Image (cartoon, rainbow, N blue to C red; front, side, top):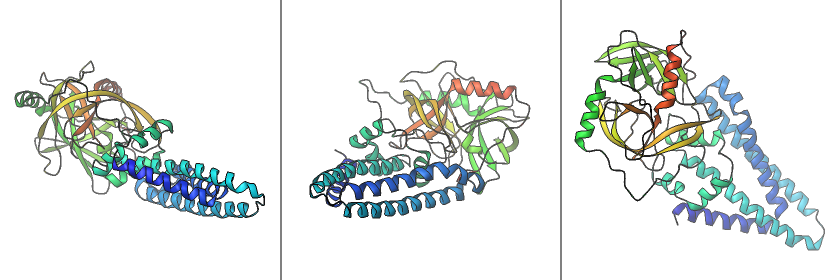
Length: 392
């Protein structure tokens, strides 16, 4: 039993005891008020974040949501107390107490699920690992619908994760089949690095506060792919090739998939082929890119652990999207997003875009079929694509 399970059991017991003491009418009024406030916040979040922007708009939404939920919860509590005081039937106390205990237990599970989903959406660490490892919270997560976007967005803010939410619920547990997936040896990493280094570029995006930097890879003549979150909200995007900045034009900006395709006139970097097929567990390669803080070229060993059809929210938390991704044993650092996952034979089998929330040594890469489709779309595009709003 994890520490999170102990907390869940303690919260469940405490809320059930309180529910027994104050009764079902009072607890029910409190729960309905608080839940109604959260539902209202989720509903009007897009109306606020649109005009105010992702940063200040999100802060206003959080304050309004939890402020409204608290006020409605207090009002519901008071109303429930008034109704209970008017119940004159002497035999009604025991049923009301039993109802209160049941409602308190359900409310406790709901609250720990909300806070658990928030923490699970944050950065990797002991708390996130304990939450994701909770058997009780995972069981609740399987029964309840996907966490609302406001909850996952709070978690991303707490964890400083600029990309999209990987999963609408808890991150799946790390697979542990009988045969381990071993990292490539240094010779394989070197071979993959030599094949992809000339094609791997650095991306600089300007226009948002603080700017943004990431990695990308040339996949066709004067064409580079990277993550959408690397260039989100920018008005000028540059591809750095051998120290020179070349102005790039976004032709595709897919905030749901988290992919962008750039046209870079004069780019001399050779293009790497995008793999036609999906690779199996055990496929090895190197994750190439320019991670922070040095922003120097690096090649990190990577091995495919499994393939997932992951359902999560896009960059702006508007709707759910399914992504076919690889889960890797690979280090992913800020600035490495958008870099290619290259095999020793010189093929791009994925695009690095996120690190795990439960295990810091886990990385995720977009598989190539969706990338190929967006590149084909870019080849037919004539007008620049909007890069959306700046991320918080």
